[in-house]
Length: 241
Image (cartoon, rainbow, N blue to C red; front, side, top):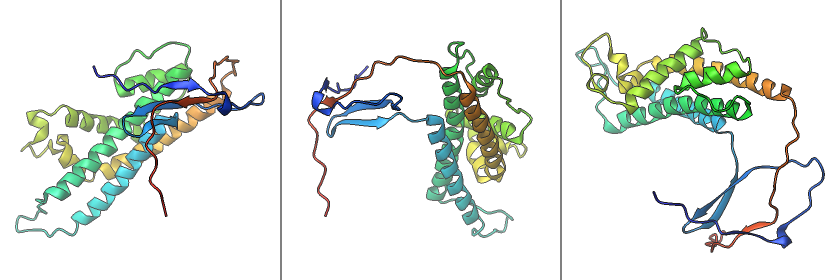
């Protein structure tokens, strides 16, 4: 396994500044770029990033669907889509919407695990992990909500994308076309599933944020390094005029 380049960090007293009692701290992830030198960023809540990416892909998919209507109905009383670029865009945005939706609940479950005192989650499926995580905090996971059912449907399509079989890559069965991911993406299913999921997920996040506020505040001792710099050579930024 290849290892990442070392960030070559060291303490520089000239960069250290005192912090008042009660000051907020942020976790900084530092990495090494072989050409640009050291780069750092503030740690993110990845469930939020994935939820936003899923939403953006859904919006693009909606626009693509409106373009389908411009295709003429032929003698077979069907619209035939044969343009590789169009189909690729459908498949790309559809896959992104589905995958990022699943990743959003995976990362939300991981954040709940982080706050839990019960140790790592033991379930392995996305919805199973979320169910286990929410149960630890007595958060209601409304499994009768259309959004939960939409998530389960999208997980099936995600699985078909990642685990292709003869029956889910193409089918001539008129009753099971929705098991083929691209066919599902081209149908109205995304427009009837994702909005339900987004509503359900937003409600779940609201419950989680309220739960965090009610959790007992604990005193934690952190070993914080101040005045840190990298000795990696850094490529200068281009001049802007």
